[in-house]
Length: 231
Image (cartoon, rainbow, N blue to C red):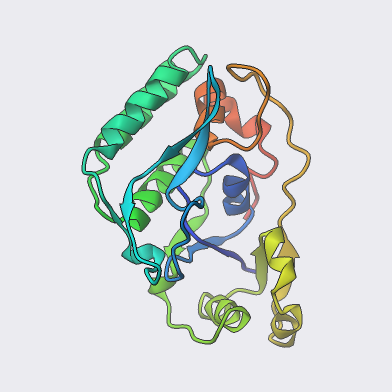
């Protein structure tokens, strides 16, 4: 049984994104689809003393651009982002250890590609969390069709027997199409997360995974539901 998930890349995603990665054998970045403005592709949320704050990678884009075509518009954005993270998380219990790791990662973010930048950061975070799932790109495969057909074609190309989907896709995914092809469909459940010691009230689940890492370090996996999975 090979379980696959297919999802657009996000900038420093929340813990649920990494739980989804941990639950499958192969996670495919679906960045050959249209870029959506004011979405998670180039921004996420962090905790600050003034409340939850957006942190956004500045990009050039047109209405027809795919995620993989989008370019970063300011060459020194990573320096600014790291300063923002450092300012707000310097007093976090595990920032000294984890911060030294991610400071170096941010210092080496030189690609002008949003997709490549997201891939680099997500790869580094999965490594830090001990997640062994194979990461690949939709461009690594030949596939065709429209919407559900494209996802099914991509699953077949990757040799999947099981497809793990985010719950939002329940409104459009043609499950029967997958069943006819002998591929089971499972839905990701994002409920049941425990709270952890977090800087600044009130507690917020829906922030970047870096919040959990800076506060809990290597114990971060204890506050994730599926970060350690037998493959």
